Amino acid sequence: MTLKIRINLIVSILLFLTLIVGGGIFTIKNARGNIQAEIASTAILALHMLDSEILSYSLSSGRMSPANVSSGSIFQLNRLMDIRHLKIDFYDARGRLRDSNKKNRTKVDAPPKWFEAMMDNVTDEMPITKRKVYNKGHIVGELVVTPDPSYEIAEIWEEIKGQLLFIGLFFIVVNILIYYFVGRALRPIDSVLKALTDLELGHLTTRLPKFNLPELSSISDKFNVMANTLEESIADNRNLTQQLIQVQEDERKNLARELHDEIGQHLTAIHIDASAILKAKTIEVSKQSASAIDQVARQMMDIVHNILQRLRPSGLDQFGLEIALQELINGWQQRHKDIVVKYDVRGVFNDLDESILITIYRLIQECLTNISRHAQAKNIQIYLIKYPETIELSIEDDGKGFDQTVKPGGFGLAGMRERVEALVGKLDIKTSPEGTKISIELPCLTRGEK
Image: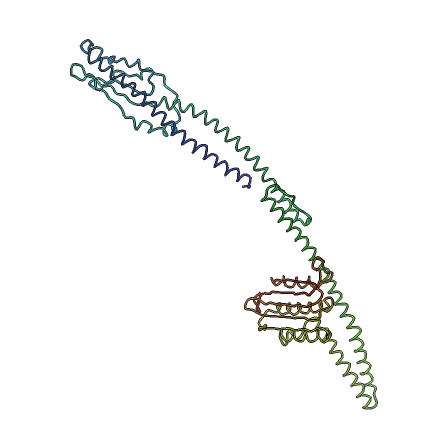
């Protein structure tokens, strides 16, 4: 069921309860009161008249013929046919009905049974009234006055039918108007759904217009902010992917060049010295060639070590994070002796997952690289603290800072943010002309916990 139909149905039910239940109870209550008042006033008038007739009959009873008494025409009740709200019957001394004002009266169209059932107790407070009729001290008969609301109920039903017809038409018209105006009010939702569909299809430039309703206007603003963020994130991811590919290709070129230029030359030198040993005629010549081979082999070991260190820090696996960081910082400081580095590592990191360890190492390595290239700093402070649930890393320098509104062309900060977000961490950068501070928070993931 759509929201439009659901709202229309709820409003229709409330309107129905208000019109039918509330209005019906009020109408029925008033109708009962009117019927009781009408019957009560008619009964008072009729009883006064009948009491007068009974008194007149009693005073002139000697002149009344017995035939009139037995025939029941003493009071000529047929003349009271216009008294519709009362049923007046005359019974003789044996209880036989002799006369009634209901004889030969036109029957009214009976209202529905449910309506009569709602009016069934309207005459509870108006009991049947009886009057004894005497002749010379003997009971001749009895007049019985019974409230009869059927005519009044029928008249009220005729009035209510018109009201019900009006209420029904009003209900239909109001429902049509509600359906129209609810549909009009919810029309912006179609724009929201279309915009979401466009985003799903990859149309990242989709934006919502400014709606008049405050609630929908807020949705429009939030949607547009989300779409902008999504578009920028996807663009950043594309740039990051291209940069990653470029970095991989550059690294492969560097490795290929080093393998060809450095190791290739050394292997050639080893080959030449080995050949000299094979052709040597004296032990001294062989020793010289063997010494040259040893020296070249050591140089090759240093080259391979540097290559492996660039691919993956060997100390991280062998000695742990603390030793690997110390080796990294000491090596970096030897190349940049004019920059003072202070670092403080607190906690035990041996039980952490490998992804956390390599991320911390690469983050510090990248920060040091960026500082050496761009910051022109004189002092660097590094703090690495392990808490029970989190790890906090802070790298601060006193360099010239940078403009965060300008997207960097390199891979550094974007790669750092990508590494941190991959581990569900937080990265915060504060920079000014007085320096830059990078604060990083990572979860404490132990081995096998991911």
